[in-house]
Image 1 (tube, protein in one colour):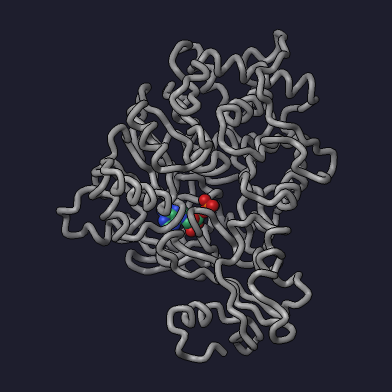
Image 2: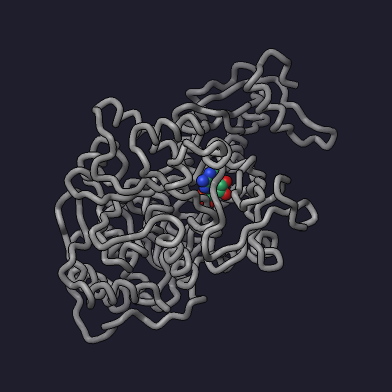
Length: 507
Ligand code: AMP
């Protein structure tokens, strides 16, 4: 099934229900939403020559137009490639090229100097499509296994990988939401405070299915004060937020004496939530929090920790339950495996593996990475954790060394590659350091070719010309040598230890 059928169905059942909002202003009801999508899908076909199965990329900040374009892409049978709008143009161009995208919509147009292949850049439309015709009254027929969303995640090899999510994956993921996360009602309002190219955008489907309201803040991003105003004006608001966003919401709420009025649910995930922060969030907002654990390869749907379990601090096991990521969601099985790929007993830590209907089809044009990650039908997540006897999963480490800063994943290798391109850098190694505001921040250990040839300002400029600024190291530590093992491999664990206790020599 083409997931765009959910929009057609909602428009037929509830044509006049409010659908799209910019701030508190309604911009479309469900019949208007579907009509715009259909016209845009025809435009993709007739004006831009997009055929079913072809890829169309989006490099845009959140907007109602973003949702319309996504659905138009699916309605026409094409594949959406949402790209993090904070990426550098060079990074976005690489993704568009890797995906073989025919079109890339950008907020303003003229973002790129050049694009690979026959990819064309288009400014995101500001007016309704003027194309009419009898075709595509219903979404293009698709099978469950057909590709719907190429989700680009950063790779440990330094290059993004395109996670292939099918229509069936998206349906399975969405149906878990009311079962495992939060029931959805027609008067709910899902607010897109985090980027639509990621988790927040993936939560659109179930809200379309239930005919709920979709709200893009006027700031097109996350501002706690604005969010609180929206919640009070619209009511029944739910949103997906990284733990660092929840922390900022708590600070702002305390500052202005706000206690969560109008917010139904805050779904947090994407990075670790520290217990002290969770306790403060509960003190501030009450029982409005639900946790999910997922990854692009199994979007939003590995485990969930329920509102009730999070909120009930009277239970003796609250600290361990609240520090966990909850239990397997309805469409997946979760296991913890040893190094040989055998399931481990409760309480033992190993690699988390997942199997089920939400698990990706593989990585786009990357059979090697697909084979290494999907083994015997199980997705190897690269996360380390353990299950308890009741099926609660606790994450203990990340084997992929990813740094999660402000909810965004940053892969050290990618940052190291850019550092190593600088002629004055002899060696470099990047690790994450605990950071009260961002969860983690990027620290670069740099060995310069000659002493005093480099400073932080020079490297900052180097980064800004090549990479998204959120990946730029927050701190540079210049040293004469890096600690290595007998194979010459740099010891990242030693670097992390040193950051906690710099009294011992580094190498
Ligand atoms: P992404 O593919 O960008 O969604 O990142 C997925 C990674 O984020 C996972 O593999 C985990 O390492 C981490 N992650 C996701 N959800 C949680 C959570 N609830 N708690 C801790 N880490 C998480």
